[in-house]
Length: 278
Image: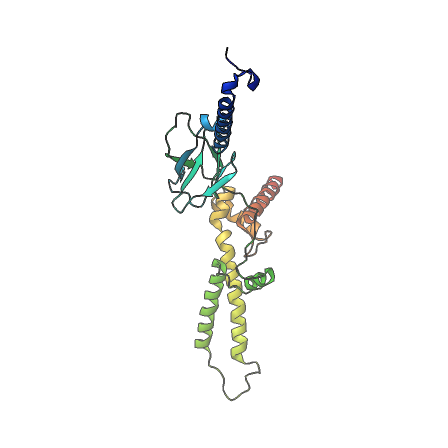
């Protein structure tokens, strides 16, 4: 009969000492095996099913095709990360259960997961990032310092001459040359006193101003413009020009649109008066 209870009283007397010694050896062996098993690392089921794989990747701009340097790559599940080098390369360990969050200035954020078929480490890949634009608020840039300094500079700017101002200057210069050639400057008298030269020059300036105004007006108000606006010809056109000259009023600064509008207005008045007379 086999003893399975561990009670020494059931063992024959001539075997008790040997059995007791054998049980001590067995207990020591069990204790050794237990302590030896505690030193081994414990692996979870997920580590066995989803082992870590080293990913060696490079970030590339989708449009430019250039590497994306100094981008942030974070393993969202394990909460660790890295930064790409100057050529966009990075190395990181991850499993099929992990997700990498990729972000870089000037690009849209993106997430990366291992393809299910990948089982060999290291796994080399390229991640393409889409370029992104950042809207910014409108700003005012003043090259000349403060707003007050900018206004002061604008006031002192020399505006290019218009066609009208250039014509006035040319007439004024020509008139001055004619006046200097026609009259000699009197000597032996005080220059502060009016002289015949001064009076003639003043009168000449008045005449040149009137002529300049007439030239500028004539460019906008002439026989051709009136004929094109009214459709008149011959003597009837001459009669209306006399009628319009006595009533219309223009200045060199009057826009062409206003001149044509006045011509049309006085042409209607001219037709009404002519109709009444007939």
